[in-house]
Length: 244
Image 1 (cartoon, one colour):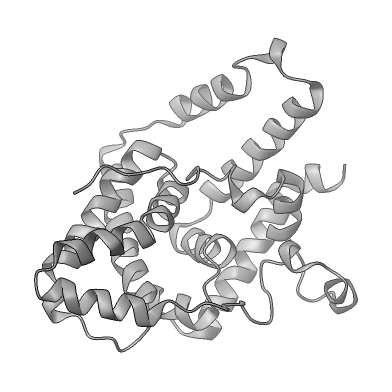
Image 2 (tube, one colour; image 1 turned 90 degrees about the vertical axis):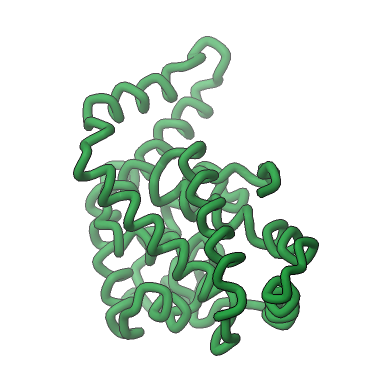
């Protein structure tokens, strides 16, 4: 497996370039407030009516998978380069650990290589990709839960170190931004894993409800319900920031 290139920061703070305040608004947007939603920019909405996809790369992915099934190493490298950032980012957002995300991502692509001859293009390749990612992420979170490798005290200590690293070199606005970003990260990380995965796939990876339903093996209505509950929880967790 090739060494990963970090095309973007896999942590929540990347958020496709959105400031933390915009991300906060997007995550807790209320779908029932139709007048407000009507004038809300698309990047503030976690649940747009449709996810724009002007350059569907499914045909390219299908062609690459055909070549990979025939043992084409170059095709495999091209497929990894196309999707590695998305996979690493999704895993990092789920596990909260950048180094672990690279290990899990390598396992994802190794599974794709080993099972290429059995792959059938019944849906978008990314749906297949995120289904494998989901399985490995859920396995890892359950393994860590059983072993209790990371205590809540350790998480809090690490979080404090991140925020307090260099206060003398950061303007007040940057400190506030870091504090808000940490609050958003913590709120998302505290969601149940299925809700968290639905939020990550919808908000960060721009998957449609139908695609998320396939990845999580649930109905579309169940996905909408998951996202609604997640939004409600995030609104409650971040209420102090929303009131500011």
